[in-house]
Image 1 (spheres, rainbow, N blue to C red):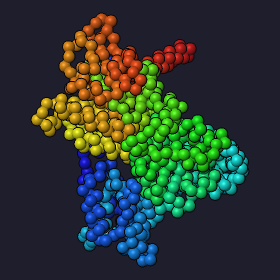
Image 2 (cartoon, rainbow, N blue to C red):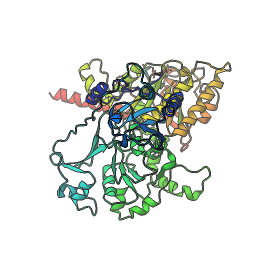
Image 3 (cartoon, rainbow, N blue to C red):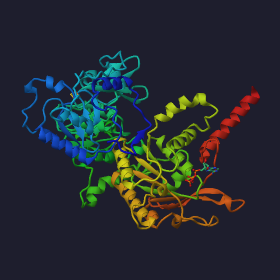
Image 4 (cartoon, protein in one colour):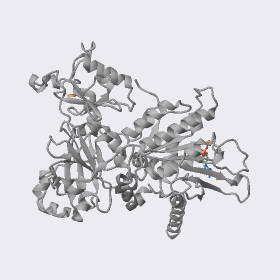
Length: 622
Ligand SMILES: Nc1ncnc2c1ncn2[C@@H]1O[C@H](COP(=O)(O)OP(=O)(O)OP(=O)(O)O)[C@@H](O)[C@H]1O
Ligand code: FES
């Protein structure tokens, strides 16, 4: 059942080949699975159906595991390959149902579809007209054709202390591309199919990941019977640990660093009872990544090595001759018990003090005054932005969020007032820095670049009940690792008054729900809100926010656009930081507006003036 308000990712996976393949060979199932939230009833019906056909299945950490019946392959297996029907573990070629989203993932044929569609394959007798297709291996063709064994020179150029033997790199699955000077690793899914590749460029240590459409690949080193794993975020740390021969743990390299963890990867991690996060927090937006990923992987099996001077990332620990096994042994649970002690939090606190810049959050590049006052943009907080009607709330929030998204903060917009196309056009113009309507030849170039930003848009518009909105946000934060959600604006989203009480009571309930969401999912929620009807000459204050005081009480930050241009000759427009729970600094940021770039950023405006000055001198010299 398709639900309104589905997330329409601007990002598309341009891999026509696998999509064409999937349409040919899994035509009974809708392989273009639209992002939708799981209907718990569908999941219950599905499990009831499995019991009715007496099909063994296993409730895993994040997925239900069962024999795949989407195609003929399981039927082609000799009876012995499929375990006796009553055994607790499913046998044969396994498929996985994600318990949060209901995505049905078959790694054997690299297919993903919705639960409702997969159910058809488990009904006895199969519905009239339903036929299974012969399945063939998904082809992932590597884009690197000249791969050879790692050479001693390549091993040397890695510069890892004590790693002299190139054979060790080959033993962990590395290959060498001599022309492009890069180390190459295959990414495999839960059934060991090669579905992608990850490379390390030796010149600048840059990493790139290439995947087919399912993005289910992981890089895992270690025996298949190990039930513990250390998760690292980059290839250098993977190589350091995989060549240490740590007997107790497999070593797993995440496919997209700390930017995101596709749900399709989770089946590949199902076999581990313990996951130790030993991450390298190289970008400020990734500080909370371990907690976000642990929420996705079932926190109960997750341990964390908090980065401190004595417990840095693996490649740094090796360089400082620290004992890697001791560091792994000191990993602590991600989730604190209900009651905790200072001793249990001690390492957290030390780690935060030694990484205070990252704990402060992501800095804006366009608004240095905001960094001075708010210190940065942090996950798990609730921000309210208000200001007079037409004062530029949406325009400002658009540039504020674009600045963060350009630094890797995965952002979900809920634009209930203006259409997504108009919002995206504003974002694109702020990204480019000038209007494209008279430079249409440049559009494709900028659109290609813009599309790579982690920006997602809810397809809700106008007034909406809270429940489907929260469901869509929860789904996006799970599937797309969203870190920042913007609701613009709250009054527009409300409106469907399901209560006969006054609107303020309803608004308080909605704000409490967003407050709870921000805290529970560690996502920054920004609510754009209208002010109460006030006289124009009065300065807005935190009590000007529409509704009761609950909004500003619950909020961590309150930002107010003050527009004095309308009430006095020398009046200015500025953003007031009226509340700042994190570090308390209050103050104002002048808002000079550049109509061309739709930008409030003095940085952008100064750069534009310099560019125009340069073009002017060049044209006079010419
Ligand atoms: N400082 C400014 N000077 C001139 N025009 C501006 C300024 N800020 C925004 N605008 C323009 O004013 C229009 C309204 O801006 P915007 O929609 O961001 O205001 P808003 O506060 O979100 O409005 P609403 O209260 O209806 O949500 C836009 O076309 C925007 O480009
Ligand atoms: S689709 Fe699952 S085994 Fe082929």
